[in-house]
Length: 258
Image (cartoon, rainbow, N blue to C red; front, side, top):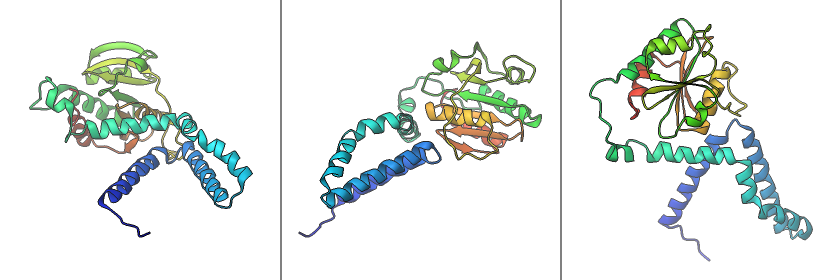
């Protein structure tokens, strides 16, 4: 029977390729990648024994494959969550298609929001004196659950306050500062640590916490390294290192949260 490749077949292959690529980006460098390879090899072995009519082992593996979907959801629950966040935040809330853009009543700033300048000023000052900092900037998702582990502040954003919080001798310097709706919501907040095992050795606990937070939420995270004085921005698991103050300003200006 001749095989006919239609336009819908091409679209189908293209969509599957996109899904597999996004899945690879989410699990690469993590323990989940090794688990995924193992499951794929088991499935491939099952296809082989079925083709060879090896009924006993085929039946045993068939029982395992039969509950494979449930097992995958349990094993890859964090990766599934991250995948859905990527879809929701990177595509639905993009500048080309954004509910916020069409239905928001928030005033559009013609100049640079004061909050952005205060964050850039604080990060620049802390980077120059190598003061470590971890700043989580909330977007659509709420940071209320994360704030429960820290100290509630609810203050206006200012460079002086941020620098004071992260000063080594203050009781609030350890942990993250949460910024939500243009206010400093809380300080000294613990963040989830990423499970990625292939991160560069130069990444300390702040960077790993920033990556972990970006994997569990849609927040934008800014890190100031205590060792190098470099500014790093983490968004949806993607890391941009050695960010200049002007680059940080441009990144923050793109956000519709000020």
